[in-house]
Length: 237
Image (cartoon, rainbow, N blue to C red):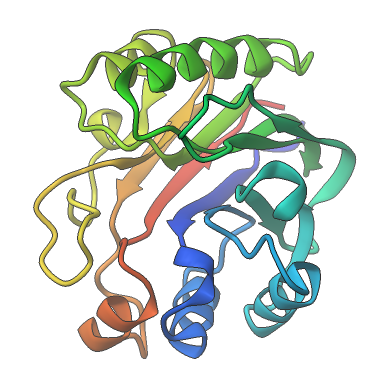
């Protein structure tokens, strides 16, 4: 019987590529991820071309998302077989930014996996409602194992973050590695970016990576205003 596959998942708010896209691509490539959950991906003029350029520079391909999901996107390695994708726009509250989910069902090795990238609202009530929708959407993917990640816009003591962590595994809390805080990149003092998994997935490590070969602190500060979170996971087949 083949061993359950081990995969690497990165989540990263890239601020619409407004900072240093070369540094950003170097960081993503150095993480050697199988899946990348992006937030604030390009979503306006020529956004598909910009997202494809980033993926190519990181030796990845665009799986789904971007403008069609109001910012969240998913990149993947060629190790990943895509079964289906769906971009979801969430209800718009007047005066707030439009939010959405990029979702997919993929196969890696002998494992079938649901994936969701999100960037939750700055408004507390709207954000709390969005977490309920996220959990429903994840459960509706029709898979035994799933991953959700992104910019939660809330620290772990907030009620929206707690709602996610009560149903799913908060990977940093389960198997901390690297450093914890993700924002702001220049002087991180808070954790608002996270990767969650369903309970059957084994979390091996999760946290902000600080020791990529060839990646400097200047790269991490220049790439965008958030730091990435990298999780190493073992997925049951």
